[in-house]
Image (tube, rainbow, N blue to C red):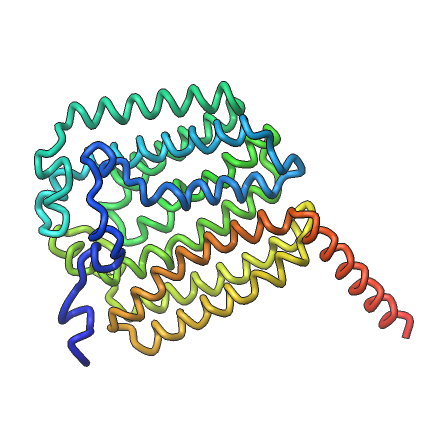
Length: 331
């Protein structure tokens, strides 16, 4: 085992996500966790693309994304408020805005309330009450279900707590058509299945930090090998689930199915690399980083699949496959 192992030199979160070293955010923005928001908005757009109403009118699109961003910011602030004492106990997080005293708890709470009210107003006025209600449900799921209830109590916290990150897929569909169809539930399930592999890869890198403050993340409780095996299982199920997008897209399904194959092959490759070197920082870091690109890629493919070019390609390919099937049956 080399000096590049997890046990020998556990990296900080700043080393895992280098942009955090390059950009020093203002205290009020830091606690909103803005780096988490783009992926949530991407899944919101993916939920919209899975409906017949895509593309949406610009005002509704802007209100939905703006409301989602504000709600996610509120959730991040409330998470920081709840965990400020815990953050102060760890060297990695002691410099954050709240434990370091750069921002007061009262100011942070006021920011969370303002963001929540603004989010609800935007979504009710610019989309509909269902989208607003689901967004607030996602906020509560992250703060109450994951942060308060599950995270300090069970090593499977992210398996259930991942619902908070999956709800934006439902918000997108609700904002587009006012109800939840099969496609939105498929994307919800895909994000739920994707979340454990993504988060446990990060937990491998931050295992020492979690152990120091008695947070029962899977690598702390079950060890590295068990966690790596769990990551591979969830990655395989995620890959299989991603292919169902062919059937649930209103148009462009075959195009999506072909374009998603390289993403799945790369995810499989990253899982194998992690299994070969479960203790290597590079393997865990690679899986964590690619998992982010993977979900962004899925959402981009969903949007691309709804283009006129992709729809025409899918229709032609579907006709060819149907003709081939009929020819086989007749033969």
